[in-house]
Image (cartoon, rainbow, N blue to C red; front, side, top):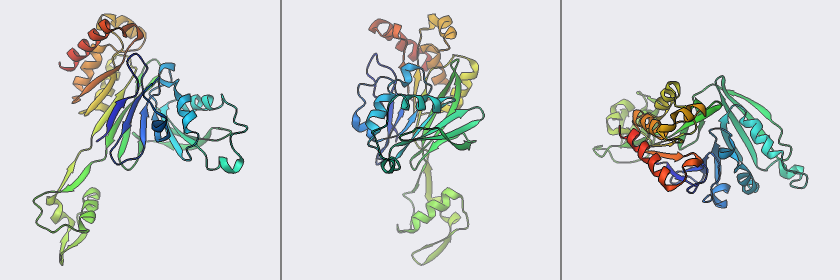
Length: 319
């Protein structure tokens, strides 16, 4: 199960952290002000998923960099077109002349940046201490990131600038049903692999008996993994809503902006944002099991208007 927790306190900007049981690394969605983000969190960070680089979503990158310096691995950063140059600009703002020898630099912190565009995903690397942008090719895929525990898909939303929405989906779990009459053993690994690859004719030996994999598939079940979605700033338009519904269909948890009140719809449209009610409604239309509004205008940080925002969001979500 993917665990999502906000590292931002009330009134602060967006920073959502994802973790998984028995997986050592953490992952962040945006890096706005986050008083609850610890040095330990940052040192164990393995991926940063940026919606866009407006200041309220990106300005805490310097804190990440400060505490990642002792890390000796490559960290992945995903975001919209231009994110590679944005990251490089942050890195070049500092003087690195006494940080590392050339030999130390070879094993130091580095970043792989994945720019999500309509033309595909462009890869770049940046290495200490020069932080030059090194093009590393292009991916043409709806999966921007994957590891041994989950995969990440995306949609490009219109916020008058590209804003990336993400879905994090835990890999499906394949297990043996309780009604299997055969004694457990090493053969189960081969059966699971055959089931995953749909290899029907794989020969499997169990207690001196020989089976084709397809004969044992009746004892296997596949459970879909947990799904968490992150949808930030977007114009409340039909096109954006179609993309959100497609990406977030039946999400277990959906975290979404709820920037304005419904009575401020004209202002929301002018600033390419959504209202709490419309964000709640698109979460409802996505058939999300749970939905959480997490990004509000500063004009609505007082308890009175925040209460109204949450009520409007709930009204939209409950239909």
